[in-house]
Length: 540
Image 1 (cartoon, rainbow, N blue to C red):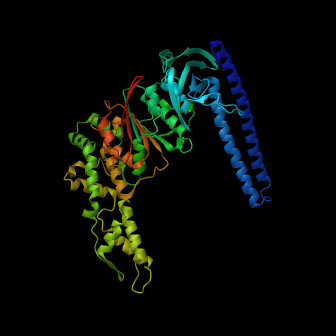
Image 2: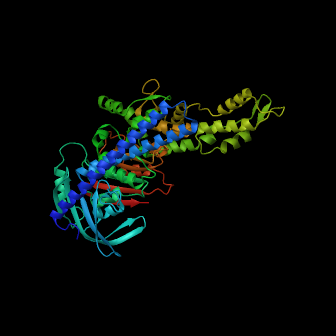
Image 3: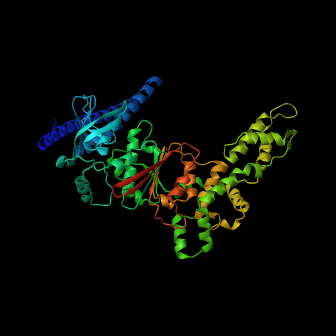
């Protein structure tokens, strides 16, 4: 058996470290060469600009771009090798497939590593399929899913290591999934408030959550200190690795109430080999959506006002707009706008006649588009298809008159007037109050954005393919409804359902789940997290 004793393991570590250092030297040389090539190419172009023909200039630009791209990839590889030199691996699992003659050792680290001329990895990334058996199984029968299918076999040995600054501090044999001794040692080493990566101590239940690829919405619930945030970030790192051809850090957004979270997690993803991920707050999203529409009270201003005054009317407005039924009332109102408020009439302008029926048919043909866009589309289609008394296309002046007449068939010229009408329709006009001139109460911000999505559409977030929502209990059902519209992508949602900053606007777990569309084939998963113990339930 390869490296059966601790002494042999220490010698093997030195061999791996030597290979890593050699790889580092080679990559440094490649980076230097790439840098020199870029400088020389740019210098050549500058000095010979007048003499270079367009074809050569274009070819030179391509060469420079390729050299820069190669250099950036080399820099990223160098960063990973630097990390491995500090701690090449933390675990080993010896696995023999059912159709194999002998067990093969898999050393598991934060990144993978193979020699340039090697056909197999010397170190396997913790997110790779085979590494999953390190977390999910003890010694005995095991399996993992490879690109070619399920691989059944047996684990003959498991080991865990603590390697720091290239020195092995300890090595433990482990017949269990994750040895408690390792866990306790790692927990006792926490010396600051920065979150650490936990790849060496991930337990089976945690691994199930991290490697979940199928759930459109994964809800992780746990009290403070349960590890839910760390699990969520490791899940993001896994997904970036698993879907690296279609998912990058630029396609992921973390939605958090404050920047403390950002400071807290700032070093985790880089430690796991991923680029930092963009983070935003709900208020930043709201400011983007309502730019040019109106100003609004912030969440912190709302909380301060609640602490300073006992405004029962404001509390009632907040509680009403934070209720699950409020979203249903909004939907019901929007659903009937077509029939109640769009009432077309015959138009006769500059010898051009447009019938009521034609206006109605054209408008109904645009169903599914935002309301304002529907009117614009209806007006454009009708104007383009009409001819004047001489059989000519409409003049620009007549076209403008036709479009203006059609736009006026809807009594709402902006989303604010539409929002006010909602409260008149439901017989609760007192539920809408300006905080001050053209400034919304915070409770109105997301209902207005929800309505804006219907009225004129919203800012596109098509590049976002995964959304992480922190402190799930502090979001209202209408806020989740807005997130569902803005981000129709997969989501990881985490928080503590029993704790909220504002008791009047918190959401229960059931309310959060109900906020997402049921008509789709979305798969929901829920993980209840306690410190180092997880219970998972699934709902399709």
